[in-house]
Image 1 (cartoon, rainbow, N blue to C red):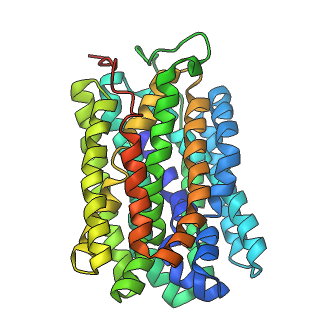
Image 2 (cartoon, rainbow, N blue to C red):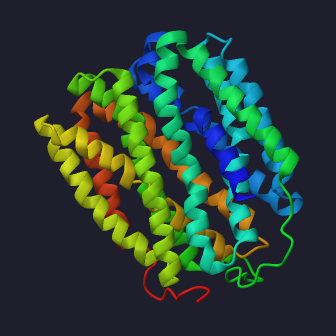
Length: 382
């Protein structure tokens, strides 16, 4: 079941989040500025923003099989449609609709972890589930830039459509309900889980952590091309290798949290490590030496390392009855920030340079430290 959820999310990630990996081709195809190219590349976030909570509520009521099969399948159809459209506004609209449909995998995959695994197993399980994003990005980094060079943006979109369609069919055929009840599924409050201040702080922490993730993932490839003269395929391959490393770090973070029974303390320590990486990235970018590409790859790994811990903590605080909706809300907040930050970061980079963009991510990571709800956290399931 976990593999089906991972496959669905990884496959649809190619289209939802992988388009910035072919940013040079997007800019060439549409003759756009960097800020407009950032909007096109992240257009699925518009739809994701609107649909996540609805998919979560639908998953709470009808289960993951319907949600993943229908949502990811519809995303496949929309990605294919985009390949045959030339107008910029129509591309943005269709990609936003594809994001709305494909976001079903973001909620459904998380619910699989909450419903099929006991608390002491969930950190690793959620780490593996979160690997779906990094796996999708790794595949995209190695596959999409060469396809863009050979077949242009339409070829990229058709590959995204084919991957999503296959994943939707597999989910619809083989996903099932858990054969047993899960004990200790979080606090499962009878009242609204949002009466817990810790849940709001988990959401806020992830919102702040999104900023460095977006700056690095959206503009990192183009930074290597423009600032350091890298070939776009080589730049994509570096990010692909970084995504594989990021997957390993996420699983290790999940295992760490399972051993301690804590989610937020490991997240705090990961954030402190990220501050050091981002500071070195800013320094390397400003001086334009070899430290820049190395820290860019490390930042691509580390800035996503804590995502699974925050996502899991939100689901456990929600409890099984509200898990889908709260996970949908959590991702909605992240994508709201992404939607705002993407063009703003593009404008900042165009006017003040890549160092300024990475510095903005550093500041947001620093601001998150007092927000992480470490105090009073109790070990779960031990």
